[in-house]
Length: 157
Image 1 (spheres, rainbow, N blue to C red):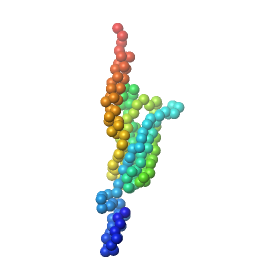
Image 2 (spheres, rainbow, N blue to C red):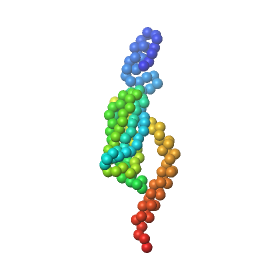
Image 3 (spheres, helix red, strand yellow):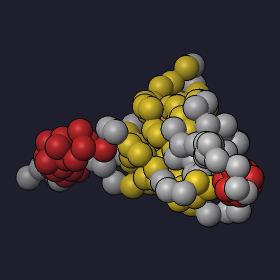
Image 4 (cartoon, helix red, strand yellow):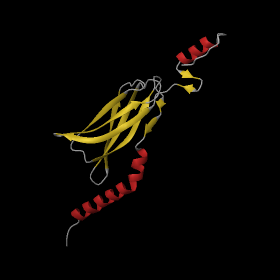
């Protein structure tokens, strides 16, 4: 909120401006903060689960998570879109994306949130730099898995 101490009409104007959802610094906005994500299986059901928080100062009306499923050799199989509901400022919401069959590998391809007018709000993934540092190692693992698969399927003379 905007606080003003004089009474020449600025107080009412400042309150009106704040009530519309923006401050003198800019628009109030939600912000999707990705807390974590992981995969799991219980019995024959696989899933990717995680949590997002609205770290902004306005409602996130809705959003989505896209999970790209990979095979053992890191080849993309398909992507699964999962929507999430409104998140109030400061609140967290868990998500659980069901996956058909046994999950081998996955990548969180996208996380997005939208405000009450359908505009995209910023997304923060504090873990992205960690995954970026691990990428060369991950690519090496994927290459080794593909080579091992080729050896298994190459006819022996």
